[in-house]
Length: 608
Image (cartoon, rainbow, N blue to C red; front, side, top):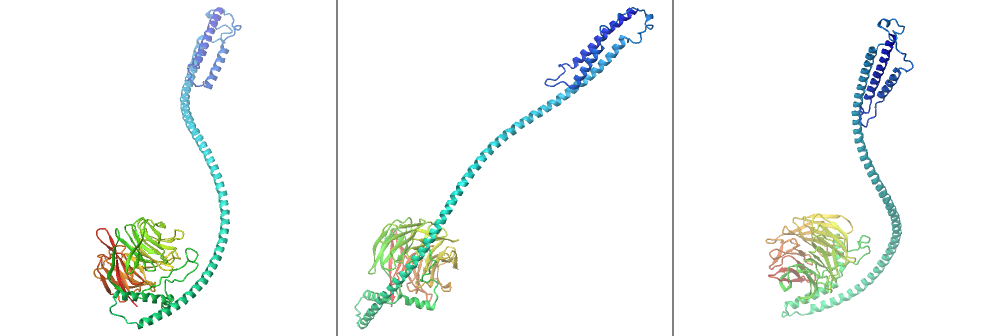
């Protein structure tokens, strides 16, 4: 009986062992790599529980020496044995181990679920990690680019610093050189002032000697003239003498008397009565050229002018329109300029015009012609945006004064042969130093200029905005503006520089008294029309008459003193006129069909 019980116990123990082994094997199955997610390490808690379960299973296995042989006992001996209370039944152990196995299975399932959840979280984190690694790579590439750009910027900064250092050194060298040059300039200016003072003193002595010689010559001439007048008073005039012969004799006597009269007498008388705005006296220290230049003063030879009555000489002159005419200072040389880009010089001999010279090389149509005070140079304004200078006796142009941006409408010499003034449609008036052929001053005006005239230190310009402007050669601004009705086409300054004649497109001529700077008289006439923007009007040499050509070819002459129309001469004298200062001749421009333009010489009389 006891043996039988022991056998059952022995048989129960292996069964329990197998059960534990099965449980252990089941635990190993749940923790085997088949449950693990690829790339995911096993959970530490699951491994720890598996190790504890394995140790517990080992402890439950019986030792071989502890197993006692079972004795077969009968049923009646089960409760009587001393060890019946200590040995559990196999069924109870199986139930117990099954319950533990189920609990372990639940724990393993829970842990497997946690492994899956954490694997998903790990995948999300790995995707975020990949994204951040991509961003990190992009940022690293951007950092590399910025580092490269920084290196280039550092190189550029170093190069700029080196360049600035070189420029600073060059600047210091130039400043030192400028200091030396300024010192040299001051020394040269001092030497120039000394030379100018010596030159002025020498010129003063030469002028005093020349005045003494001229005074002696004038006294001798006056004595000779008085003797000739006494002889002429005793002479009996025959009525058979021709008018031309008589006129020539009167002209010669007028010239002799004019030369005998002292030039300063008229100016001194006028200076005592009026204070002139345009004086011929030198003002040192304000001229553009720096050194004082010789001033030329023209002395009118016509004491009193008589109105022209008839054409004395008509000849073919230019191949197209004649736009400008001008007498030389000695009145024996006449210049005409036209649209054929030629300037013709004519000698006035015996009341006739004889061709002297042709000046070539103009770049455009001639709009204005002027002689310098010495009569040795001719200045012309052209349509090629420049003024050109010729020397009398040379056919080709000597200098070209370029700098205007539009047609040059007027070009006049100042009272020195080395300075000139030009006006243009580019709304500028320019002063030129002819000795160095450069523009010494540019005056900007809001309206384009049609004509200019020059005094000693004053420039007068007539403009398209119906205004006459006065400019001081020594100052930068306009000193006076006189408005007129109509666009100004021409200006003419009297020989005494006290009156200014203007012609405008409102078909009027205006005489401006420069002593009070206002309009003294306005000349109108029925039929008189100012036909273009370059129609000219002039004073007679004695300022007794004003002359202008109308669009229909009629020449109108007004009396300045009375303001009345004195005469109108029929003929195509449209645009350009001049009055010979010695014997009162008028030169007018005329058109002839089909090709040639003629210069007409009108006979003007004179009174002693």
